[in-house]
Length: 158
Image (cartoon, rainbow, N blue to C red; front, side, top):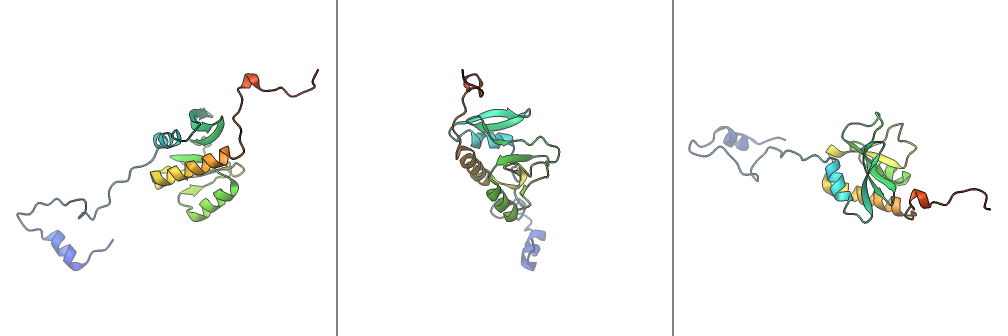
């Protein structure tokens, strides 16, 4: 950010009786960013119908009808403070092309219908949109899963 000579003059030469504080509107310093974490993900995700808090490989996750929606990636190839979100391959390619500083995929996750997201680089509105995209993808052709005890066993009928 650059300043013109007049602005620099007023910054350096404050009137002696004037307070040295400035209002947020007048401040030239950026406000500290609020970083997203899984608590933010949880809050937004649980507002979607049928989404439940769960775990995946021992880490916090969100699932809808028993299917993974988003989770903290456990593979060490993922960067810290990332989120794995389920999306189809076409949407993933668009996200990666759109903003590679935010979205990425490692070799481990390449074959999965998921994209990794650097949570520190997105705001809550973008996170809400991503979770909505994931929700549509996961629920597109998914019927609710039946409990394990009620699943029909495959094999020969008597």
